[in-house]
Image (cartoon, rainbow, N blue to C red; front, side, top):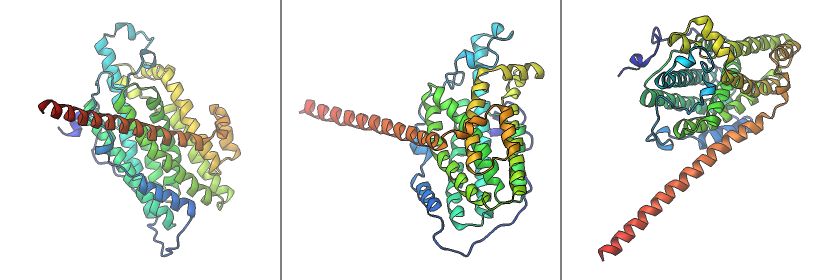
Length: 369
């Protein structure tokens, strides 16, 4: 079946083209480069993995309860529609919201792949090109994973959210080589990590938890890369150049806070647009997501040196300024540790299964004797 047939809404032209500007930069300086970036490049090589082998795709997924979301987290809970809904209706709601979320993950990962490839092309330093090449492979793997989950386990996709597409397009159209870093590594990756982490830490379903845990392990490296590269570069910029980038961050943060809640899901299920927006806005899940969203982005923005008066004023308005003092390194370390623990648990289970098979074979052989 064609992917186009799985879309819950018309995705429009299957080919989206974004005109880009700027130069492809080559470096004939093959010195070793920055030690921190090269260490991250080595880690990126060491941590490559195969989604077909590392993830247990045989795990079953209930398409009407794919994430184990409690009723209270559903956007229609407590509204006039809820009392009229059958269990099947509630299952459809869970199904469509999960399909919408993972579809945005899929589209965002394809965007990240293209942005990482753009960084390889445009960044002037060879050490950054090396690392970006490993990230391009990571993002391709993530797109592969989310596409398989949606196609094989849910059977439904949603088009890319218009506002996410707008932010991605703005990131790619800008001719300045640092903008794919800023738009993707800081804003869109921060958005993704918040959404991934919220589901990873609340779902009781093993396959989505496994997928998100392993993807977040990769993303921890990507954010570290963006921070290193931008922190070094932004020290060299004028105040005017820094303010331009802060304006981009401010607009992106307001957009992600206000326009990425899944209104189109409710509209697709027959809820009038105004009421759909009101339901989404009141959803406790959205409030929690917004808090987690800024816990990743604000300390990163401060760390790379974008902390001017207007930006701080915008974060005061959003109620998130204090998050600038958050420990981003600790969050990223936790992401990596959770993946390592999941691997250790999986290896123990596999070893126990092999031991059981050997014991059974020995016992069967002894019985035959």
